[in-house]
Image 1 (cartoon, helix red, strand yellow):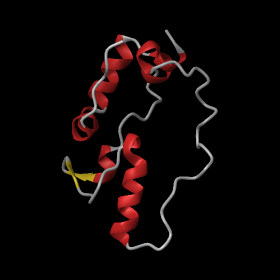
Image 2: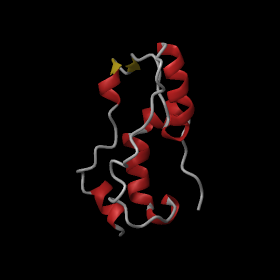
Image 3: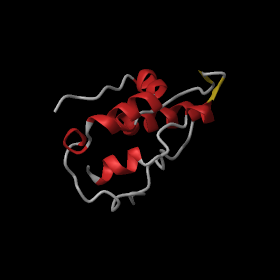
Length: 103
């Protein structure tokens, strides 16, 4: 079992925050931005808010040094934690159109 597998299966990982931005299982926010499209989303949000200065992500990575192994997630995650993530984050996965890609 990899360190990531242990992190997911030991019950300490906060896999889903759906309750923070939903009421009775329905999202109550104007927009959801995926990490993959964050650059484009920040530009759109800057325009929507009418800001003079563009929104930007901090130059420093919040957890940039946390993950030492940079292999694709498909090589790091086994079936048990994958199934736990699929169940715990099912609403986010569906909402954002995510899916686990094959190895």
